[in-house]
Length: 242
Image 1: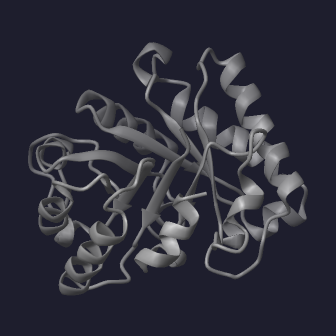
Image 2: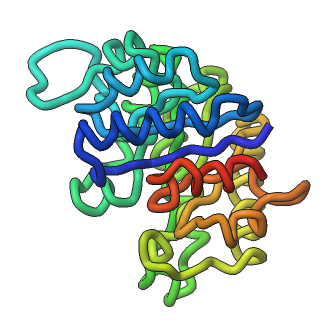
């Protein structure tokens, strides 16, 4: 089954998130697939209640590597799990770039997610300069190695990897399907060599209803991570119903 994840980022206020979640619950009332909503932290509790009787699943945009303690500003995976969070984005390019999150930290976050029965969605991808220099594959392999190599493969059976070419996120630029599938093949091969069995690989990067289908299909990605096009229920439904 394909997996579709809506990343609302910091685009909506808590009030707007509640209204949007209610709209999603109506539109997705009879949905049969796997769709995940990731609102901001302030909206999680309210959105969780709205989705309680919906086929939609709750996700978080991040989580702490620590369960409890003196970690000011952090969000405990224990508390997220208690709210019904089933998935969590980890290592999104915006957090890597703006908050300088290291591979060591991402590995700890993945471990914390798994320990609390939250599926970690590890984001990887190259920026425009790395792409221009022809280093995309090397960068992605390094990101995978940095975040996953220190973790026991047996504990990562629920891991998901999301390939997001950074240069295509929020830019309107599209990654060529064949190029994206070559990256997917590289990720699959790296995981196979590392002993990680059958890890789903999603695509993200200016995904819209108009181009979503090109990344799916029998030989395509295992789902999509959607940003801007996930802010409206009708738009995201067009993608998640493919």
